[in-house]
Image (tube, rainbow, N blue to C red; front, top):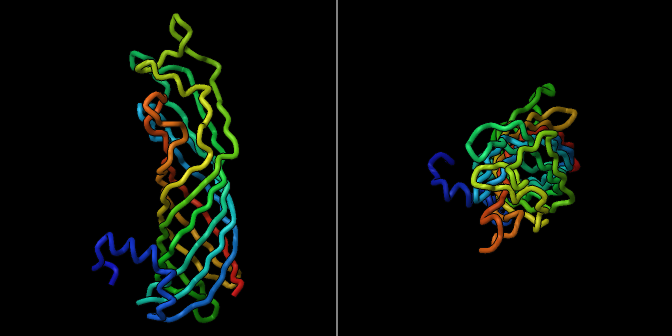
Length: 246
C-alpha cells in the first residue's frame, strides 16, 4: 500500500500515525518499551561563507522510550522519544589562501543534550516466533529534534600558519571562526532514518541509521555578523536495546 503513496502523503502518515489510534481504524496496541542507545555521530557544519571540512566524529548515547499505539494496514505505528548526549562540531580541512594544504589542524567539539520526538512506522514480525525464534522488523522514523549546547572546546594543532600581520593564512581570509563562541545554545531541526529491529526473549535489539538536518544557526546571522548560516548536518549510526514494560 505505502508504495502507492506520494512522498508528501507518506510523510504526513508517518508524522500523524500515532494519532490515528484515536480513530480506531486498525488493530489497537498498548505497548510501552524503555531502553538505552549508543553509537557514533558524523557531523559537518553548513557555513556561509563556506569552510572546507572533513567529518567530525563523536559519540552519542542516551535513553529511549517507545509507545506503540496501533497496527494500521500491516504497519505498526509508534511514537519514540529519546534523551541523548551527542558530541558534534566540525573538523577543518585547512588550506592556505593559495589553496595549498597546510599542516595546521583545527577541531571544535560541541556537546549537546538532544531530544528527538519521532513518529515510527514498522513492518514485519512484532514479536518472537514459534519456539522463541527471533522476529525481525524493518522501520523508519521521522520527526522534530531539539537540543541544548552544554559545552564546547577548540583544539588547535601545534603548527599554526599565519600571514605577516599575524592572522591565519586561510582562503578568502576566513579566520573569524577561531575563538568565536557559540551565540545560540538552543538548536532545532528535523531527524529521519531507518533500520532493523530484532525481537528476542531477552528484549529488542535495533540497528539504525539517521540523519539530522539543523534548521537553527549556532552563530548570529545578522547582516553585520560573520556567518549567514551555521547549522549542523549529522549522520548517526546507533544500536538500541529495549525491554517491554507493557
